[in-house]
Image (cartoon, rainbow, N blue to C red; front, side, top):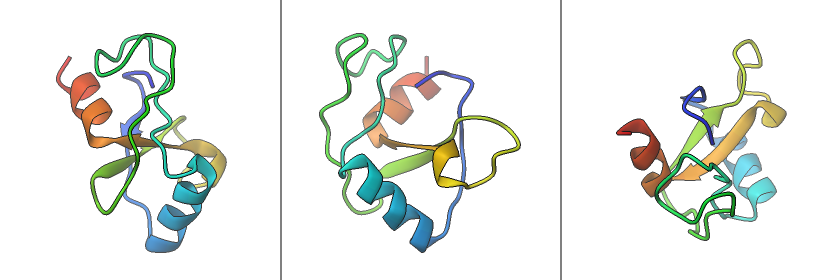
Amino acid sequence: MTQKQKRIDVGEKRREELLARSGRRCECHGHDCPHHRPMLRCTRGLRGQGWHALQRADGGGDALWNLTAVCDGCWRAVRDA
C-alpha cells in the first residue's frame, strides 16, 4: 500500500467481490506501513466493516482491478504517517 492510494466508497456487491478476491485478508504489502513487517503481506483478516477499499489509480473508479482491500490498522498506520 502506498500513501498515493485513497479510500473509496464502493457498493455491497463490489465489497463482497473484493473480499472474495483477497481471501478475506488484508492486501497491504507496503514497505512504508509500520503495521506489519516490511514487504510482507499483512496477516490480518477482514471482517464486518473494519476494513477499507483503496483506489490504486485515479480514473479506474471502483473496478475490481483498481481496488485494494486493507485492514483498519494498515489504513490508520499509513493515513496517520
